Amino acid sequence: MERITALAEHLSQTPLLPVALTLLAYQLGLMLFQKLKRPAWLPPIVAGSLLLVPMIALLLDYATYYSGAKWISFLLGPATVALAVPLFLQFRHIRELFVPIAVTLCVGAPLAAGLALGIAWLLGADLAVLASLAPKSVTAPIAVSLTEQLGGVVPLAVGIVALTGVLCSLFAPLCCRWLKIEDERILGFVMGLNGHGIATARAFELGHQAGAFSSLAMGLTGAFTALLLPLAWALLA
Amino acid sequence: MIRGLTTIMLFWVLGESLHFLTGLAVSGNVLGMLLLFAWLLFRQRIDLELEQASSALIAQLSLLLLPGGVGLFFLGERMSGQWLPLLTAVIVGSLLSTFICLVLMKALVARKESR
Image (cartoon, rainbow over all chains, first blue to last red):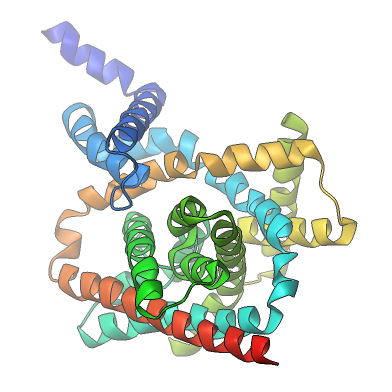
């Protein structure tokens, strides 16, 4: 028994256990996601988190886990830089619908952040919660940087971003039916603007053109918000 | 693949340096993304290696976010009294902004195509 307690201690001294558990939970989450026939309400990150929670609670504590798992989250840096590539590849689509895209982006991106901030503020959310909420429609790697800059709580921001993505991927197709929108480009662009990567993955399942426009919108919204949100925040604060 | 990753890392270093030297209110990795995007627009082509490295990283985004995301379940006391305003804001805000964007873009596309 003593040896077993010592073993848990030994394994948590290096990043080995946190990294291995993260990979394991992710694999199991992915299997669950496939098994349930890829439901929009349970993206792999949510499934993986739910499986990872009991593992951490049993074997480690969150602080130990997080410092070891930095080996994985470090790669969010290059993954953010890598977003330039899909943005470049989809950029030619901007010429097809330049004015609608530019206007929807300039109105929609501030609206996505502003509406949620306004509601949360009216209902009495505190400043750190607001700072975690502001980048809710931005792709998660950029949202993590933004929330750190504004003084938010990173895990909260990641959770909010994931929930926003799920809601938009469920809601946008329903609204399109109701508004009688058949143009995949509109559906895709609005999904990517509001629901970033999670909605973009969904948009690609709905149609190639919807996916391409969603991917474009995700890149544009990410860049637009990353440039303007810190300025807007400084002015408001 | 590795050559693509090297390019990405170098652009990150460039972005981080720019952030540090100018004190711009945009983080280094985002600046790196914008610089790489500008470079690609300028060259108007992209190497296969860079495309591969980039899609490999992006395909695993959920995994990379897992360590941060799971912290949501360990916030504890920190969030007392905050869940209601937060969830209301995310749900109502997302639904409204999705709806408004759809109406707006539908009108803009219709206007463009009627001309």
